[in-house]
Length: 273
Image 1 (cartoon, rainbow, N blue to C red):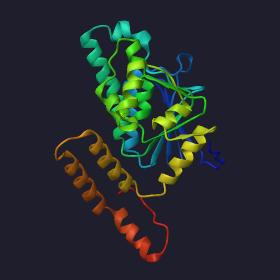
Image 2: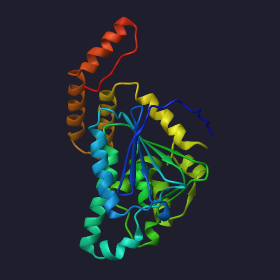
Image 3: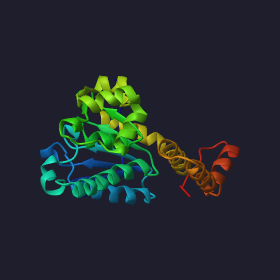
Image 4: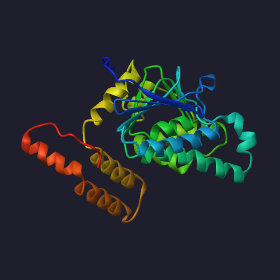
């Protein structure tokens, strides 16, 4: 386990609504799933709001990295099953619900800034999909992971299954999906489901995010777009995404600044344009 040290912060800016809290400081946005009485289980409204919030963060100049975490001792217990009878009770509702839920995860996955999941406890079902949609996953030693869809007669969607497969491979993905068994943080680390284990997971995630606020935002955005396209797309879509990202970076003031800083032997001052 790795231990991180504290650091000074500027006065934070924060907002809270829909069970999802936002705090921005030092170019890092902390998004906290805040429904502790339900172990941060996500309502349909929360999935909608998360997608909207990700879109807002994508366009904010004062945000260069995002930490996603949960309140108290849980990351996210997945979708709120208590809503299912009313909102996910028939085929039409299931398809509509799952489209909104996946849109929330997809918005995190395609956000053009690095997103680090600080998994501070239970990470179950749709909560796993949300963590899988992040670029990096750090967890506390006592975190637990499971995808119990098979125990609920639910089929885990294509998006979540694809993310799981990309991280752990087909054999482990089958075991996780077919059994619904719980994994410890150590099991998840060995399987490739998470990247690191930390006692102070939030501080570790912020330290990781801080490293990425010092480099070119356009480089990160371009790399993330290409990687996501390679993981999800077929045909020449990857090449189109890559070319667009290369063009955007090549025409940027950040590219000019990077070359000038190199010539002048100084740290570049990136602005993200």
